[in-house]
Length: 248
Image (cartoon, rainbow, N blue to C red; front, side, top):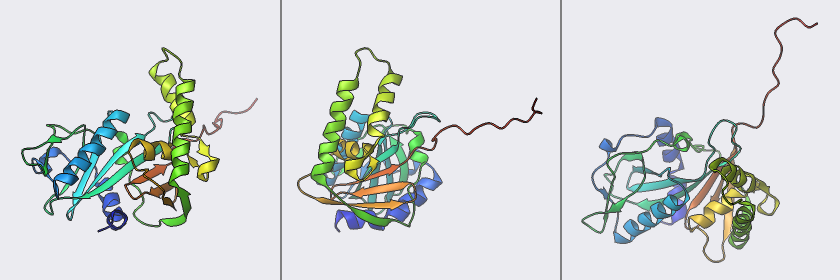
Protein backbone atom coordinates (compact mmCIF):
# COMPACT_ATOMS: atom_id res chain seq x y z
CA UNK A 1 0.00 0.00 0.00
CA UNK A 2 1.43 3.48 -0.86
CA UNK A 3 2.74 5.42 2.14
CA UNK A 4 0.28 8.30 1.73
CA UNK A 5 -2.64 5.86 1.59
CA UNK A 6 -1.48 4.17 4.77
CA UNK A 7 -1.22 7.50 6.59
CA UNK A 8 -4.56 8.83 5.34
CA UNK A 9 -6.41 5.69 6.40
CA UNK A 10 -4.96 5.90 9.92
CA UNK A 11 -5.40 9.61 10.75
CA UNK A 12 -8.59 8.78 12.66
CA UNK A 13 -6.80 5.97 14.53
CA UNK A 14 -3.94 8.26 15.56
CA UNK A 15 -6.28 10.94 16.89
CA UNK A 16 -8.38 8.43 18.83
CA UNK A 17 -5.31 6.78 20.36
CA UNK A 18 -3.85 10.15 21.34
CA UNK A 19 -7.05 11.12 23.13
CA UNK A 20 -6.78 7.96 25.23
CA UNK A 21 -3.33 8.93 26.55
CA UNK A 22 0.04 7.21 26.50
CA UNK A 23 -0.12 3.62 27.72
CA UNK A 24 2.46 1.76 29.79
CA UNK A 25 5.06 -0.54 28.30
CA UNK A 26 3.31 -3.57 29.80
CA UNK A 27 0.72 -3.49 26.99
CA UNK A 28 3.33 -4.02 24.28
CA UNK A 29 4.89 -7.34 23.22
CA UNK A 30 8.63 -7.61 23.94
CA UNK A 31 10.28 -7.20 21.54
CA UNK A 32 8.54 -5.04 18.94
CA UNK A 33 7.87 -7.14 15.82
CA UNK A 34 7.83 -5.37 12.44
CA UNK A 35 7.01 -6.50 8.91
CA UNK A 36 10.58 -7.18 7.74
CA UNK A 37 14.24 -6.29 8.24
CA UNK A 38 14.03 -3.23 5.99
CA UNK A 39 11.16 -1.83 8.05
CA UNK A 40 13.15 -2.42 11.22
CA UNK A 41 16.04 -0.37 9.80
CA UNK A 42 13.59 2.35 8.74
CA UNK A 43 12.24 2.62 12.29
CA UNK A 44 15.74 2.77 13.80
CA UNK A 45 16.65 5.55 11.37
CA UNK A 46 13.61 7.60 12.40
CA UNK A 47 14.33 7.10 16.10
CA UNK A 48 17.97 8.07 15.58
CA UNK A 49 16.99 11.30 13.86
CA UNK A 50 14.53 12.11 16.62
CA UNK A 51 17.24 11.63 19.27
CA UNK A 52 19.52 14.12 17.49
CA UNK A 53 16.79 16.76 17.76
CA UNK A 54 15.55 16.30 21.34
CA UNK A 55 15.41 13.91 24.28
CA UNK A 56 11.60 13.75 24.31
CA UNK A 57 11.35 10.41 22.57
CA UNK A 58 9.26 8.85 19.82
CA UNK A 59 5.62 7.92 20.12
CA UNK A 60 4.73 4.42 18.88
CA UNK A 61 1.08 3.82 18.01
CA UNK A 62 0.29 0.38 16.65
CA UNK A 63 -2.95 -1.22 15.43
CA UNK A 64 -4.26 -3.26 12.51
CA UNK A 65 -0.82 -4.18 11.21
CA UNK A 66 0.41 -0.58 11.10
CA UNK A 67 2.88 1.24 13.36
CA UNK A 68 2.88 5.05 13.39
CA UNK A 69 6.00 6.80 14.69
CA UNK A 70 5.67 10.41 15.80
CA UNK A 71 8.33 12.74 17.19
CA UNK A 72 8.43 16.44 18.03
CA UNK A 73 10.76 18.49 15.87
CA UNK A 74 9.65 21.57 17.81
CA UNK A 75 7.44 21.96 20.88
CA UNK A 76 6.70 24.79 23.33
CA UNK A 77 8.05 24.65 26.87
CA UNK A 78 5.83 26.64 29.19
CA UNK A 79 2.60 28.58 28.83
CA UNK A 80 4.04 31.64 27.10
CA UNK A 81 6.51 29.88 24.81
CA UNK A 82 5.53 30.85 21.26
CA UNK A 83 7.29 27.90 19.63
CA UNK A 84 4.82 26.05 17.40
CA UNK A 85 4.20 22.36 17.87
CA UNK A 86 5.74 20.66 14.83
CA UNK A 87 5.57 16.87 14.63
CA UNK A 88 7.18 14.43 12.22
CA UNK A 89 5.29 11.23 11.46
CA UNK A 90 6.22 8.04 9.64
CA UNK A 91 3.98 5.00 9.17
CA UNK A 92 5.27 1.45 8.59
CA UNK A 93 3.84 -2.06 8.45
CA UNK A 94 4.06 -4.16 11.61
CA UNK A 95 2.87 -7.41 13.17
CA UNK A 96 -0.97 -7.53 12.86
CA UNK A 97 -1.19 -8.40 16.56
CA UNK A 98 0.68 -5.28 17.68
CA UNK A 99 -1.47 -2.94 19.81
CA UNK A 100 0.31 -0.06 21.55
CA UNK A 101 0.47 3.64 22.34
CA UNK A 102 3.72 4.51 24.11
CA UNK A 103 6.58 7.01 24.01
CA UNK A 104 10.13 5.65 24.21
CA UNK A 105 13.55 7.27 24.31
CA UNK A 106 15.19 4.63 22.13
CA UNK A 107 14.89 1.27 20.40
CA UNK A 108 17.66 -1.27 19.87
CA UNK A 109 18.04 -4.21 17.45
CA UNK A 110 16.56 -7.48 18.67
CA UNK A 111 17.61 -11.11 18.25
CA UNK A 112 15.69 -11.34 14.97
CA UNK A 113 16.28 -8.75 12.23
CA UNK A 114 12.55 -7.99 12.18
CA UNK A 115 12.51 -7.23 15.90
CA UNK A 116 13.39 -4.17 17.96
CA UNK A 117 13.94 -4.19 21.70
CA UNK A 118 11.97 -1.73 23.84
CA UNK A 119 13.47 0.07 26.85
CA UNK A 120 12.40 -0.75 30.39
CA UNK A 121 10.37 2.44 30.82
CA UNK A 122 8.50 5.00 28.75
CA UNK A 123 8.32 8.80 28.61
CA UNK A 124 5.46 11.31 28.98
CA UNK A 125 6.34 14.47 27.00
CA UNK A 126 3.66 17.15 26.87
CA UNK A 127 3.42 17.11 23.06
CA UNK A 128 2.27 13.47 23.14
CA UNK A 129 -1.04 14.59 24.66
CA UNK A 130 -1.89 16.77 21.67
CA UNK A 131 -4.03 14.98 19.10
CA UNK A 132 -4.25 15.98 15.43
CA UNK A 133 -7.82 16.39 14.15
CA UNK A 134 -9.70 13.21 13.34
CA UNK A 135 -11.30 14.67 10.24
CA UNK A 136 -11.95 17.89 8.36
CA UNK A 137 -8.64 18.03 6.50
CA UNK A 138 -8.91 20.22 3.41
CA UNK A 139 -6.32 20.52 0.65
CA UNK A 140 -4.99 24.06 0.35
CA UNK A 141 -2.32 23.63 -2.33
CA UNK A 142 1.18 22.25 -2.79
CA UNK A 143 4.76 23.29 -2.06
CA UNK A 144 7.85 22.27 -4.00
CA UNK A 145 10.16 20.06 -1.95
CA UNK A 146 13.14 22.03 -3.26
CA UNK A 147 11.67 25.24 -1.84
CA UNK A 148 11.07 23.60 1.53
CA UNK A 149 14.70 22.46 1.56
CA UNK A 150 15.88 25.99 0.78
CA UNK A 151 13.89 27.50 3.66
CA UNK A 152 15.19 24.83 6.02
CA UNK A 153 18.79 25.68 5.13
CA UNK A 154 18.05 29.39 5.51
CA UNK A 155 16.69 28.78 9.01
CA UNK A 156 19.62 26.58 10.01
CA UNK A 157 22.03 29.32 8.91
CA UNK A 158 20.01 31.98 10.75
CA UNK A 159 20.15 29.99 13.99
CA UNK A 160 23.91 29.53 13.60
CA UNK A 161 24.44 33.26 12.95
CA UNK A 162 22.26 34.30 15.87
CA UNK A 163 23.76 31.92 18.43
CA UNK A 164 25.95 33.67 21.00
CA UNK A 165 28.87 31.71 22.48
CA UNK A 166 28.02 30.71 26.02
CA UNK A 167 24.33 31.53 25.65
CA UNK A 168 22.08 29.72 28.10
CA UNK A 169 19.38 27.21 27.25
CA UNK A 170 16.58 29.79 27.49
CA UNK A 171 18.35 32.14 25.08
CA UNK A 172 18.91 29.37 22.55
CA UNK A 173 15.28 28.26 22.84
CA UNK A 174 14.08 31.83 22.30
CA UNK A 175 16.27 32.17 19.21
CA UNK A 176 14.98 28.91 17.75
CA UNK A 177 11.39 29.89 18.51
CA UNK A 178 11.84 33.23 16.75
CA UNK A 179 13.34 31.70 13.61
CA UNK A 180 11.40 28.45 13.28
CA UNK A 181 8.14 29.85 14.64
CA UNK A 182 8.03 32.76 12.20
CA UNK A 183 5.46 32.50 9.40
CA UNK A 184 7.42 32.18 6.18
CA UNK A 185 6.04 34.02 3.15
CA UNK A 186 7.83 31.67 0.75
CA UNK A 187 6.09 28.71 2.43
CA UNK A 188 2.64 30.20 2.05
CA UNK A 189 2.78 31.75 5.55
CA UNK A 190 3.33 28.42 7.26
CA UNK A 191 5.71 28.36 10.25
CA UNK A 192 9.28 27.91 9.03
CA UNK A 193 9.61 25.02 11.48
CA UNK A 194 7.79 22.70 9.08
CA UNK A 195 10.79 22.99 6.76
CA UNK A 196 13.14 22.22 9.65
CA UNK A 197 11.16 19.07 10.52
CA UNK A 198 11.06 17.86 6.92
CA UNK A 199 14.80 18.33 6.55
CA UNK A 200 15.78 16.92 9.95
CA UNK A 201 13.76 13.73 9.49
CA UNK A 202 14.91 13.10 5.93
CA UNK A 203 11.51 13.55 4.29
CA UNK A 204 12.87 15.71 1.45
CA UNK A 205 14.10 13.65 -1.49
CA UNK A 206 14.31 14.81 -5.08
CA UNK A 207 11.65 16.75 -6.91
CA UNK A 208 8.23 16.51 -5.32
CA UNK A 209 5.12 18.65 -5.10
CA UNK A 210 4.10 18.26 -1.47
CA UNK A 211 0.35 18.45 -0.72
CA UNK A 212 -0.57 20.89 2.06
CA UNK A 213 -3.73 20.31 4.11
CA UNK A 214 -5.36 22.23 6.91
CA UNK A 215 -7.83 21.45 9.68
CA UNK A 216 -8.48 24.21 12.20
CA UNK A 217 -5.15 25.30 13.73
CA UNK A 218 -3.37 22.27 12.28
CA UNK A 219 -1.54 22.01 8.96
CA UNK A 220 -0.13 18.86 7.38
CA UNK A 221 2.54 18.44 4.70
CA UNK A 222 2.26 15.03 3.05
CA UNK A 223 5.68 14.01 1.76
CA UNK A 224 6.22 10.64 0.12
CA UNK A 225 8.60 9.71 2.95
CA UNK A 226 6.57 11.04 5.86
CA UNK A 227 4.25 13.70 7.17
CA UNK A 228 4.90 16.96 9.00
CA UNK A 229 2.08 18.25 11.22
CA UNK A 230 2.08 21.65 12.87
CA UNK A 231 -0.18 23.44 15.32
CA UNK A 232 0.15 27.06 16.33
CA UNK A 233 0.95 28.09 19.92
CA UNK A 234 -1.80 28.09 22.51
CA UNK A 235 -0.82 31.39 24.11
CA UNK A 236 -0.88 34.42 21.84
CA UNK A 237 -0.62 37.15 24.45
CA UNK A 238 -2.01 38.40 27.74
CA UNK A 239 -5.63 39.38 28.24
CA UNK A 240 -6.21 42.69 29.96
CA UNK A 241 -7.23 42.31 33.60
CA UNK A 242 -10.47 44.03 34.57
CA UNK A 243 -10.53 45.80 37.91
CA UNK A 244 -13.06 44.65 40.51
CA UNK A 245 -12.81 47.55 42.93
CA UNK A 246 -14.43 50.97 42.69
CA UNK A 247 -12.74 53.58 40.55
CA UNK A 248 -11.52 56.81 42.10
